Image 1: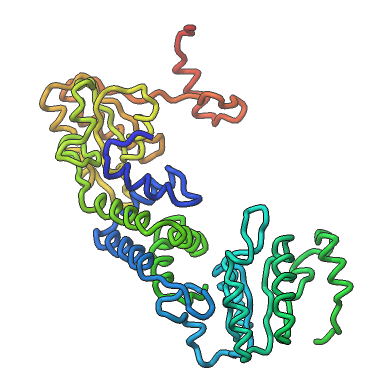
Image 2 (image 1 turned 90 degrees about the horizontal axis):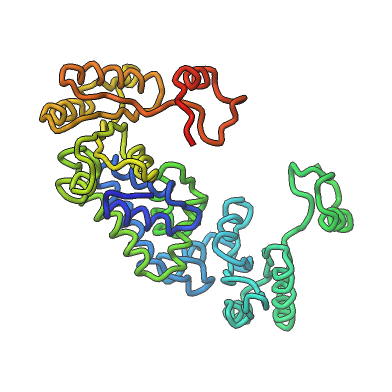
Length: 201
Length: 201
């Protein structure tokens, strides 16, 4: 791609450095900004810079936060006896979007993965044990992706949490809503039969 | 999508306002920036702001430029007797990328479209006629997309240029390289037979 403007070239390169954005898409974004009022670009840039410099990690749950404590931990209407352990903020947001959970969270910051060299010390495991150690929690829900690394992490955490006496649960596994039985993998379908629940309407 | 951080929400909304970027993609971009060093975000923002505030229109060809005159018009090695008329900067870049053209350009800024209310006065037609009127040009090449509006624009421009005596040409139409004759539309295939060229190897 040949640019006759260094300013455009630099902006295209800045956009193209973002994941999933190629140079053609980047050019389209830049030309779009050029068509808008100057203030649009200025607001866009200042929002991104303010976000990057202002964002913090919640002191309690390690969620991303604007203050010392995130909005979820600060919300007094939430059930403070329940903690849901998630891998990252994306999983946290996915659960929040269901609108079905009103407890608190604990963001691990990853999962145990010997291949990638990530051990418990790289995660917020100690902070979780400390929270449980305070004695206010009734239940810790493991909402970790059902991969080998995920299962390892859940197993490790449940072992670590055992002495505290807190109830450890895991999100239900089974055939998804709208899913076709025919195409469900054997492991999931097998588990969904073994872990069947009483039918209620 | 539920955000526990206003800073993140604002950044996601800023990205999602760009064309072709939804909220999920916007969140991925924001989380990517959070993982990088602060300076990455600052450089990204400053590149975009500098571009938007610094960019100008070339005084001669109406291409986007960093200076009063764009790099192409300022390049003394280019053939100054040849002008290629294009609809927009994207078409200009596409032609530049072929590496086959060493003349100058003229960016119309659109094409004549009565439906969208775009007439010759909204385009840089007068500037083109002025350039031709100066008498240094030998040939004006029409590189306009072969749509109805495009053909109308080419017809209008060629009529306007006729009195000046300058040679007006249009880019060749025909079956594309790698194209399958079977799937070429009738109009293109018909024209490519009528406008056949002597075979040379």
